[in-house]
Amino acid sequence: TACSSKYVLSQMHPMWQGPLTIPGGERQSPIDIVVRKSIFDSELKPLVTDYDPHTCQQIWNNGYSFLVEYDDTTDKSTLKGGPLQDKFRLCQFHFHWGESNAWGSEHTVDRRLFPAELHLVHWNSDKYSLFEEAVMEDNGLAVIGVFLKVGKRHEGLQKLVDALPAIRHKDSIVEFTRFDPVCLLPSNTDDYWTYHGSLTTPPLTESVTWIIMKQHVEVSHDQLAVFRSLLFTSAEEDVQKSMVNNFRVQQSLCGRTVRSSFT
Ligand SMILES: NCCOCCOCCNC(=O)c1ccc(S(N)(=O)=O)cc1
Ligand SMILES: [Zn+2]
Image (cartoon, rainbow, N blue to C red; front, side):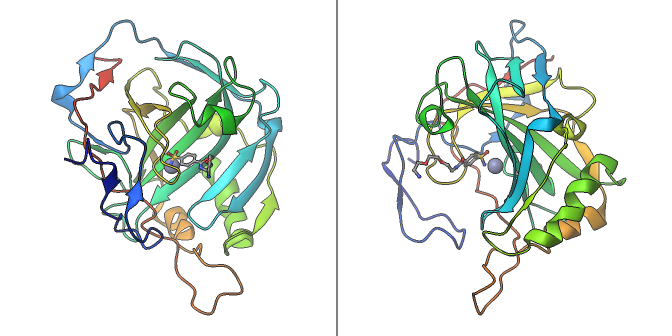
């Protein structure tokens, strides 16, 4: 099964050709969250985010998504609480989305797909001194996942949407400052699912404590359309490819337990 083999069939995504070797492969992400099989854990605490918008530095197109990157050289923008024992530093956030509103998220809830998913990426600064170190360790990373639904316009997102035309092509980057990512979190951050998984893109390392918000946030159709105006390809390439469907398919649970902070 996909849980024991060292190889997985090459992902359908154009960027990955040929078999990928993954470490073990027993705790890969994303997954389908089967709500009735998740286990309520009363020990799970509320999330505590403490983000400083002044640590926001730049926004760039890495050829797979667009990343908003934060200065993670000090403990200025942090995440603790929830399922976490240590303090984690925010290093970047990014999204995954589809070519249509019918799909685009990486995680699913009872097989339900959302048009997009936000990932806020943090690393364990109590135990490690660099992201690159933490990314290789079991308890190295914590990623908050937030589902996006199409509905009313998200005022806080608009500043980010307005910056996207400047980074249409792969490897383009612009300064992006004073953005507080707390505006992208749902009003209720006490209700979440959590499980141990991996990065959803290479190097797919199994170092992530996933924290998936139960409550989604709404963005407008037009805001999501601007995400789809980005390109996978650099300005030099002849054929321009729209940046859409940049999600990984759901992976086997391999006997893992998904815990919930709510009943
Ligand atoms: N390339 C060899 C070692 O690389 C280690 C660092 O990897 C950096 C690139 N990847 C990421 O930072 C990275 C971060 C988050 C997610 S995700 N989609 O799981 O939230 C996926 C990938
Ligand atoms: Zn991601």
